[in-house]
Length: 255
Image 1 (cartoon, one colour):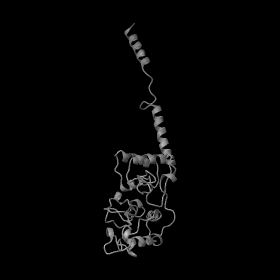
Image 2 (cartoon, helix red, strand yellow):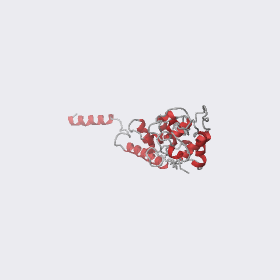
Image 3 (cartoon, one colour):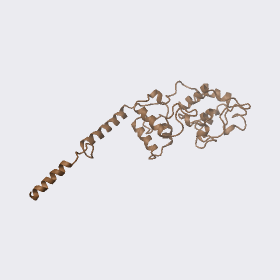
Image 4 (cartoon, one colour):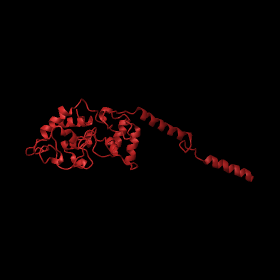
């Protein structure tokens, strides 16, 4: 056999021994088709994902701040879990969606971000969890400060032994018309950087935390109020605590 024939034969043998190219090798049509299908699926999921709009400033699950909950928020949550992004205080509030109902008297969440929040957020975006079961809805009904909140404060908080005497507890002096200004957008003296009432954010309002006994979660001190000792009334019943939560969530209006 001539040398040229031997080379041709060797090339033929080598060509026959090669395995068929995988459809998923880089640059192959099959790989691009799969990538395109995944991209289309993600876009479709984002377009059809449930969108939660609330009268309150906090839309639970909305980590990118666009007023809705989509696959983009899931990606944000994954980045935070992986340590690729440092969450803002607003993202901590919006992204804390597990468990629901929340721990320690919270409406939702446990006060921190973790993989359980990401999983629950993904299940919601995928349609596994319906909107009604995902997070608290907007406050129902109007709560009046003068008709609902102020009478409770006057009855339970303005005693001589509590916040109505010359040495008010926690430095919070409450009397008459000064009650509103002493609470809303006023820093707490027990918890640094925390407002006594932060409009539209009940979970970060120190007043509500004190009423529920969860003030330590916000860096606070002391006991639950009212304390129910000596001449101080007992803690508020759940339906009255809920009035405060709804009032704050609605923006803490002076109505």
